Image 1 (tube, rainbow, N blue to C red):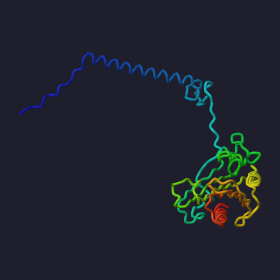
Image 2: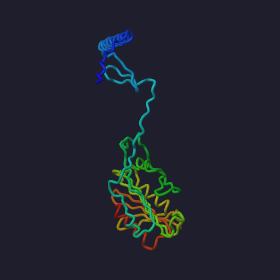
Image 3: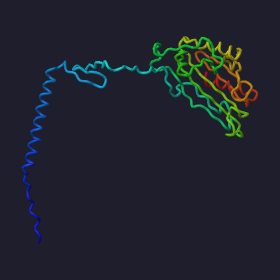
Image 4: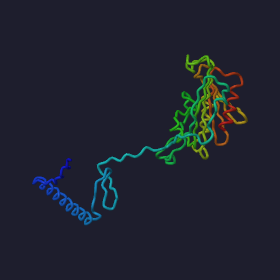
Length: 273
């Protein structure tokens, strides 16, 4: 029978004892140093300072700007783009029943942003004259600039397109016979139309599209024509207003049959106004 080996207790060497003594002395020194530092901070009180990433912080917690730093102001948030909260959705089938090959935009709206009320940070105004060489509504402004310039409460933009199935992917819609396109914009005017959007559009449609007064589904309108972008001789443009809501639309393409454009406009009135 083998007895288990007797466990022997290791005896510290002289080097080991010296190392432990050095560590203990170091710990004692760190403790004394910490006590001295704490006492010094408490003694100086409000005069104590510390440097942060953005400046100098006093003992009272007040951050003083670093004179060597350049302050960069955050970009103003003049507009916000978000999902629809009101009218603005126009189903494809409502305008083009039985469409074979089609495309449409995802509905969204652009509204004034958190800084929009600050005209110094979010300035803008409509052009003095319509820019007839551009696209409807002839302002030359993208949505982010259009909202501050017109002082509108909401802008919704969309498009609907259909083309014959046999056209497929053989040719782009711009050159495919039978293409039909509706582009539209809906604007909720600001209080009192302080941006003067409706007078601007009324003049622009008259000047740039030779639009004449008309009515669509019982709503006052201006209807004119502009050069086509989809292979037709011309495209029909229309400006509609009901209360504080404006809609302008372009009906383009060579695939329209008699009466179809009137029906499409009636759908826009029903869905947007």
